Length: 527
Image (cartoon, rainbow, N blue to C red; front, side, top):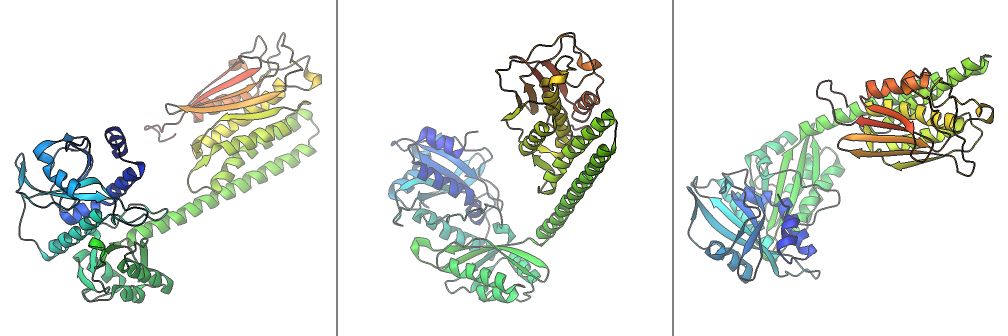
């Protein structure tokens, strides 16, 4: 289905600022729908002949809907939308007319013009119309709660017509709760409570206010209830700001081990401040879970930090042992183990600074590549370059993949650009097979290893390519007996459940190509 912006840009001549205002209305109009017990449909004019297009719709959570079918994308003209034309052309709320029928459902039509205020703060021209359609099949004598809901809804509807609703959103603030059903408090112009819904009364009772809210000065009550005086002052200032016609950010009040989220909205139909609407929600359990998750997250990060420290200790011990070993083969084996342990430690170091079990892998690759050029046994200066991005990878993939890339990068440097004393008898990348003949390296070409990565259809495609001397003619990856190649094959096909191919590069040198699935396997729960 097309979005509000798509429909408006395709069928109308609304300006970007107009469309942004319609988005703000659609982001906040669930409040008006619930207070009105009605469906809201956002209509924009298509032609001068009175044709309108529905670009958004919201159904109430407090009453049955008037429409079983979605109306978005519907273009209507003629008598069916005459009320929209009146609201649009006369810039006033239309409430006249008899009920209409949608199949077996009787409904009452209303139309609210939508204005966007100018930079000077004046009400601009009408850019759209909000249709407020109420299902009358369950009509009954309204209760006190319903009467207060409807009165508040009419005030907000007039503010839409004035261009003062919805209020501007604060940076970083979402369109999340509280909602009407969570708890509603209505204030008069002096800040006294004139009505509080049962859920609102319960929320304040949990904070420690046992008596009725009606008649209370809500700003003063917030100061008294809040466990932290600073929080109480901020919550009270938010109420006072709403009474002045401002739209303060959402506030939380903590008291007696409970937490309540509040949102204060000014009520100023026709530009006259008449009070404020305060929505409240008891979020005690939500905050308790948040604190538990924060504690768990800190524990996990501390574990990763300690694992990293332990791995670095193991690497240091192996390095000390290598210095005391007289056999060259044993020393090389220990030094290779040091590099492998250090590469795993890199992943745990990154996880210890992350808020979840995922890592930005590009930085790890860059550090491993830099280390490979420093420790590889080669006499030439080999450049390292990364092309593309690995993105964010889960820890279980990152740990194995960093070991694979560490081996491939070391092999690319050491076997693609070997020391001069090995030039006559190269061993090929990660293999003990002795080749019959190996191509010469062009001395005019700058030695380079390129790591490329891209994602396609939930698969990670990685290549490690060098422009060195290339593979020997009789090279067979399956028969290679070097530990490095065995580690790579075991990790790629086992832990990563992917594939690897070693082949001659298109422009010379050697290329290792990996394909690793990123989608989580439903059978074993691994990535």
